[in-house]
Image (cartoon, rainbow, N blue to C red):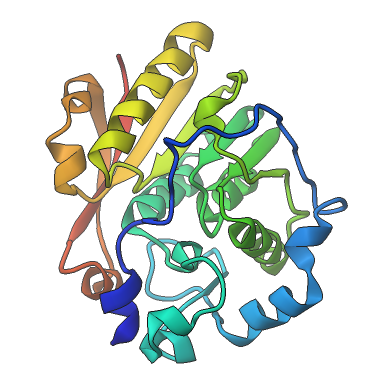
Length: 255
């Protein structure tokens, strides 16, 4: 399976430690023309499957890479764009999305930033729960396109999308930040930890983290600042796609 061998490391295309512009361009569905470039849009639609099965959130439909897709089996280097980590519904994101759907009071009427949004499922769950303001953040522009397409699949007007490295920008004020599967690299984990502490102490932002227990997360010092909210048993397809990981947990960050 070329996909498993070539691509399946959580969002390994992220390079969040590099300096980026300090601008803050928020692209709504009306202005995100680049996200809906007809050629790229057609390619994404032709090479993903719309599915709501095999995850913790059957209420949410998503365009994903599945075994029915050519590039699940094709050589990864033949994919013509940046690695499609957005096309996998990672277990940390699944847990977060399930938690928000089950506990809409967590997001109702609040501003929510979905950091490392990928397919946008957790941002979609926040919107379904009644969030007043949602921003999906992922540095891959094609992830931005995927979020737009996935919003429409679920009957939602696409919310703003930021395809910049938010860690190096001026901090914004959010009621809640959600992030799943982002503690996969030690250097990134350190930068992200400092940024989350800043958000908490500057604005009182609540932070929820979803992770299936990867070593870079379970061995990080952030563990001393976490409160376990809920642990989910992952569906069998998700377990198989993630090297046998069996559970995923939502943590409340309390520095």
